[in-house]
Image (cartoon, rainbow, N blue to C red; front, side, top):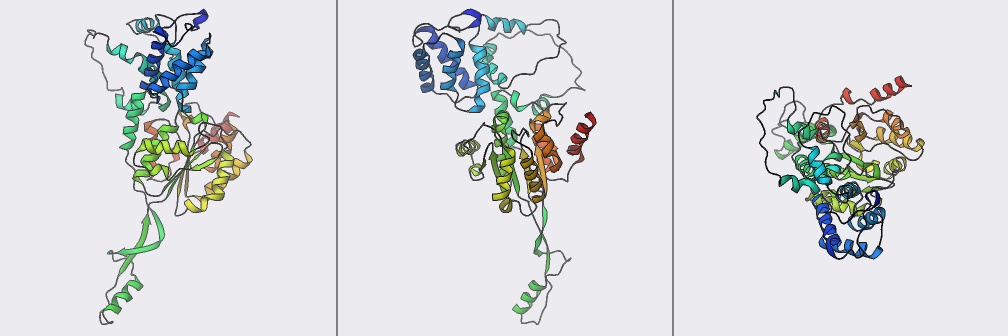
Length: 420
């Protein structure tokens, strides 16, 4: 699999990268990236071979830059490419060493390091076929008391999206498509005809009497009309949220498909309305249209400016009739917090319920020490995690019930005051 070794693990290609074993390795590497989820075709692999042959580099960094420029077309693919490059273009016999590490040995009680984003997808693409070809081993029958253990589905539901493999991401998308949403309702000022004899409708009663010439007056009844409130989503697509952006968009597509009046806005350094793009029946087509409509994908973030623009241009249009707002961001504002505080305060007063979804809550020891987080917390009704299937299911269920004290943002503010 290797093209050649150099000092300190540096890959030194032969004089012509378009001939011999080195070109074959680039082809194998491109196939592995495609299996890991990157959109790579035969033309891109041919361009990569020509690029490596043209630059005539002699260091690992130059080789990495050449392949990166050809193969990586989306910002969220960077982590997968870097991890696949590290695993594929390595020193000799590392695969045998990794297999040896998986063989039976004394248990290691040390705390395992958390996998890097994209590592699962890259390792599955590179080592999956090798593990499939291994002969089955005769394992002894072991009886396990599973009364206090979790099932595989429960572990999958609690797995962080950033640590999922390509197959697990596909399974998560299918699970999201089967998500059941509550039919929450809010009372309006309008009425509709009813068969319940509780409230008489004078106008309908008189209209019916006029049709009979007034000789027979039959009372008609009415009741208060209830509707499903609008759902407005403000989703952060900056670089710090890139590992979660596409799976969140799949979740928002499910909301748009199963619920009326869902308005979706994406923001980084500017605000983009993608409500029309999310109405496509095919989720992949909808997400591709969203990517094409957004100019600042995986860039910086300006939450304060974004909220100011939303409050000025869109709040009156979409925040009527008891709207619920989902704000998906990590709260890492790069500018001052005065504009952010003002925008959050106005947004909170303009909607019936403001729910902040933050993937940073996946950490047990999370504390709101960032300036942006501290500025936003006093102006939200609920503060929820949004990093796995379990948290998204809880969110979907929470849309149909009253506010839960378990996710009260004041708990985090009190914790911060106590630590200071």
